[in-house]
Image 1 (cartoon, helix red, strand yellow):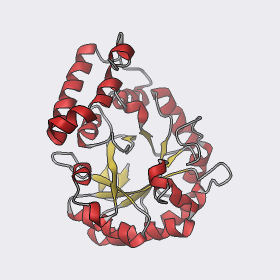
Image 2 (image 1 turned 90 degrees about the vertical axis):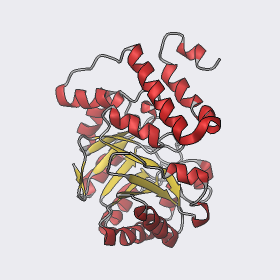
Image 3 (image 1 turned 60 degrees about the vertical axis):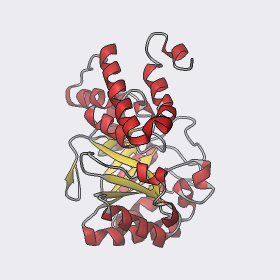
Image 4 (image 1 turned 120 degrees about the vertical axis):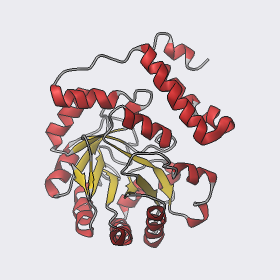
Length: 302
């Protein structure tokens, strides 16, 4: 699968997750077989670009390419400027966030809230593509099926985004109204795939090799994107890619391999965040790692 000049080794991707998919986590998932990883969302607000939080989110030192940066915002010109700013700093792919359901994002009409305002959503896509085209940087976009069950407009928007030059679409099989509740539905993703000629990535509840296989078959999507199922289980990427290639399951990792992965991840994490912030922000990762080990659910929260 190609996006512009970039080839992805396999169709199993890491979903961008705020507070999770920082550089150490992305590199860990890539090491366990993920074919592609996108950064946490970076704000389009110029006044926040030099903050410590944004600089950490935009840190790609030593990361294998292609380097993909997700940007979020509500103003077309500001989003275009943010795209250009990140391209100047090494971004090779720009991803537009129209999928985040978080209230603090949607209350500012960013993320999936943009799907309520179709003209604005299309204008943002158009502006970002025009900012990236001179540099040969492809633009991708992540969205939901719609704002609510009564307002599923992913197909309409997908056609418009393709016409504006977006090169790949990721669709999470829930509405913004659902958040992460209930089950993902894939009919809308299949409809998006049938409506456009660019690659489409299916996202939502991809938590097992069998589910990945079934979603690819049902939707016709070109790839799947794994989010929450990778938290504390980064080897899910090699499990899925092996199953898709062979139809057989890999043995689960030994506890000693989990230990090595955890220690290496934490060392990289602390190197990025420092001791004070790193110890605190690492606690969620430690909890995810140990929850499925013997006595893990008890020990994770002691």
